[in-house]
Image 1 (cartoon, protein in one colour):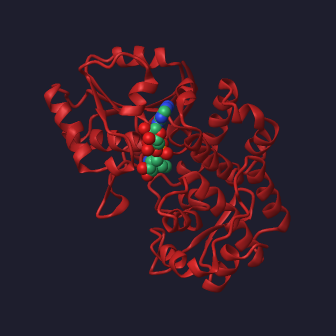
Image 2 (image 1 turned 120 degrees about the vertical axis):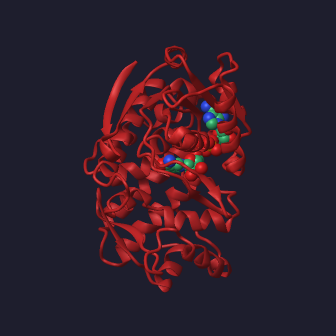
Length: 350
Ligand SMILES: NC(=O)c1ccc[n+]([C@@H]2O[C@H](COP(=O)([O-])OP(=O)(O)OC[C@H]3O[C@@H](n4cnc5c(N)ncnc54)[C@H](O)[C@@H]3O)[C@@H](O)[C@H]2O)c1
């Protein structure tokens, strides 16, 4: 196991991030006298190790990110005699990690938690920063806590079984991190290593995750509880993207939506005189290089529904939706965009 980072978070807590193999994960689990490992049915298979009585397998999918699953985790923890110093291992994508950490945060007023991401998206986005939770009342992540895990174990080997669409979804977030980075390292890495990234070469994926996490860390450590507006920058592309996902009933993956949304945010910034043309066009090129359909536009007659979906954005402040725009690479600003400009950007090809 190699330690990549020690990340200082809320209230002086620290999350240690390691790269490792599935055998290391197995050894780590057995090193604790009392633990519970939580999987979904796909990640239990991908993990490939024996699943013992100290494990719980939940059904996969966002529709199971709910109280019933939390109830199952807590019931299993009680039945297994877990104490406050026992460790909850979440082994899965963002859904399993968010729920395991949420259950750990409320079990006996806070047990211990270790996360093992098995999707690219969860490795670069859902492991650090302490956001836990479930979907409730028809909306995503409405109930939850801030509860940073004590460590994160990243095994690129586990990503090999990930369906292509899920891998691409994670890549959308990685490319977004490249734009949010204050330096060119991740961007250049992506330009130089496209084939190895797409064929999931282990060392390449590992380095890409490290560089991507470096960017996320620089934002969350400056705003651990999302109170200063710095962390909101990580939502670059999300307002445009979520509305697209919702318009097409989530037939578009989250990462595809984000990728499309990032390019729209840059175009909007350019039209508002905030973003340079060269940044906007080189970002479009990067997304195209990775096969994202960044030029897609929604039909004019769907704009009303699309704009309504934008209005539901949870980043609303005092009734106003604020978009993350870029004054330059790694220089985000939050601004409202008027309806006419949104219409121009999302419905007409430039
Ligand atoms: N806490 C945070 O900061 C944070 C950040 C971003 C996203 N999230 C949350 O993460 C969730 C999305 O995460 P996700 O995209 O990982 O979705 P997910 O957990 O639903 O995983 C996607 C699909 O891939 C399957 N899968 C996972 N790993 C696999 C593997 N190695 N092999 C084969 N199949 C595998 C899963 O069973 C699932 O069907 C959302 O609920 C979102 O709210 C949280």
